[in-house]
Amino acid sequence: MSGKIPKYFINDLLFRTNIVDLINTRIKLKKNGKNYQTNCPFHNDKTPSFTVSYEKQFYYCFGCNKHGNAIDFLINYENLNFVESIEELSLIHGLSIPFEKNIISEKNNYFKKQKLYLLTKKMSELYQKNIMFTSSAYDYLTHRGISRNMMQFFCIGFASFTWDLFYQKLNIKKEFETELLNYQLISINQSNKIYDPFQGRIIFPIHDKYGRTIGFGGRTIQNIFPKYINSTETNIFYKGKQIYGLYQVKKKNSKPKYLLVVEGYIDVIMLTQNKINYVVSSLGTSITKEHVKILFRNTDTVIYCYDGDDAGRNAAWRALKITLPYISDKKTIKFIILPENEDPDSIIKKEGAKNFQLRIQNALTMSKFFFKNILKGINLSSNDDKFYLSVRALPLINCISSDTIRIYLRQILARIIGILDDYQFEKFLYQQKQKNKILQYKIKQTPMRTLIGLLVQNPNLAYLVTSTKQLKNSKIKGIPIFLEILKTCSENISFNTGQLLEFYRNSKIINILKTLSIFDHMIVEDKIQNVFLDLLKSIYKKDLEQRQEHLIAKERTNGLTIHEKKEIWSINKKLKNS
Image 1: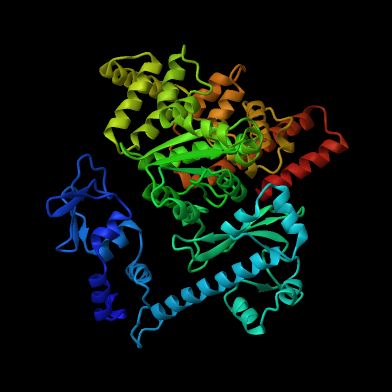
Image 2: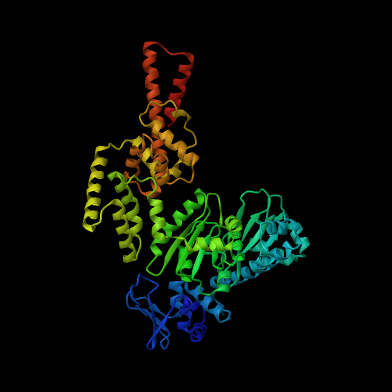
């Protein structure tokens, strides 16, 4: 790889780079004699074993043995490849990479990226200019309470309702239009007309850590679905790796004490306008592992604040599960629970910045939020429920790398269950596991039980079922329970297993559902959908066969009506084709 970039240039980059400064901007180093030390960022390090030498321009971890120069550090810490790490250092020092002439692919890729940066920057400027010409867009933002200063600070713009209007109003040159088409920032539709994917939308430019525009988010000001869209992914824009507003946060404070994660662009802007200067968003998408890594590179405390509806609460729980492997004795998360049907934008307008700051100060700790959610639907007077709680909680607790936090959460779990002694806690878990194995052995694993169990454990499977009309009058045992659960899951598309069990807490079928919710079907995750559909198909077939047998028996004794004869003909045809 290094042969693609002249060695003299790489050596010059390393000569210009002070590895201590490079690493210190990402993780805090402390002077220790001639060298600098900190806890290793590459493994769960209890005592500082990561050493950086100014003299050698080299780092080394005595714990996990990771080592290297400035380029290696960027590759390992920022998850970059070799060429991307050279680009990063080149950008820091304001240099262009002199690719060797006989190398085509990497050189072309590099220059394509540079061209994209220029095009997105120019488009961002045009969008910003355009909003001042468009009263409907400007009025929309002012109606939402966004000040002119915030529009400028976040570079907010507007894409006209047609490309022709945008093109003419801003005197865009034909050459620039051609470049935008070549790089697919604009397109040609079936009517052979040029269109901007963001047309008719407020534009929120997305910046990287250097302030370069890498993509856009767009919000419609009319009743157009979807309400929000983002740029398609390019060589410079990867949605799962970008944090909206982080550049603006770092402009105000290079090392923020907190990062407050919200759902939307306007949430970020309105909270920032109210002097809460550490607000970011994951572009309206679910938090990813990459997002978590970026957040923790920039702060030690991440506070999740999602909308006060079912979708927001589910997003918070997903964020917790994704973040758990990355928390440590130094890195932690908190949660703000907003009132029903409120979001950060609406609540700060109602309560004001001072009261919202109180919400931040009183944010739930990770452990409180964890147990608040995992205890939903649990009856602590029932040993079966206690075991179900441990089955749900322990895998999540065990994925935490910090021994201290893991032990602390296990102790809380044991106290909740009512066991104070570690040995007794392990004994309880063992006994319940054995009891559960015996129960599973006793319960015959029929296709219907498996079908219901899969649905209880994966409520989102409901969307795969297009019609249940045929099963309405079915005599197959378990069909009424299946149809009842299916109806509930279809009407509550965001339900998880815990919410489903809570829904049926006081019903006659709750014990059946709890048993099936922890039943081990031994089906690998990527096969669950196929198995579910195959089981449903076999039950449809079984129902047809039962009806066929009934009609045949009736024909022998009493004969069939014309309607019944048509029905048995139809059943025979379906079974033949199944």
